[in-house]
Image (cartoon, rainbow, N blue to C red; front, side, top):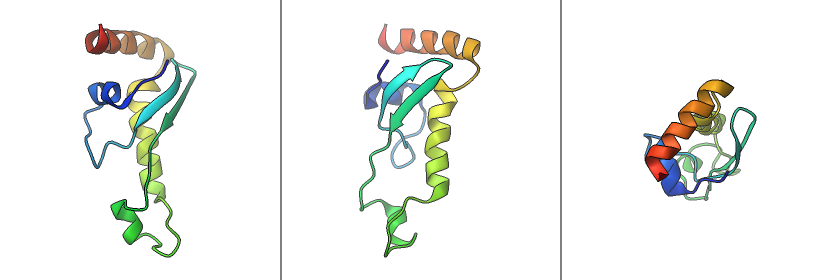
Length: 92
């Protein structure tokens, strides 16, 4: 299963600049998820976090992982029920 940005916004309460997931490329409930956060050199944290060597702060990376974990990575049974219900409401 894949999710685009508009579908993700229906599942997560965060918005820019705190919505740190742009798309889900692969989702197998209870097993795996592959997601993308597009990052550019213009991100605010790059100006102060090692500006000579622009790297995304570890806390931002962990935060992005938590955002994806929250709706998709919980226990398998709970996830299956919740995701089916959420997707049914959002896209049904």
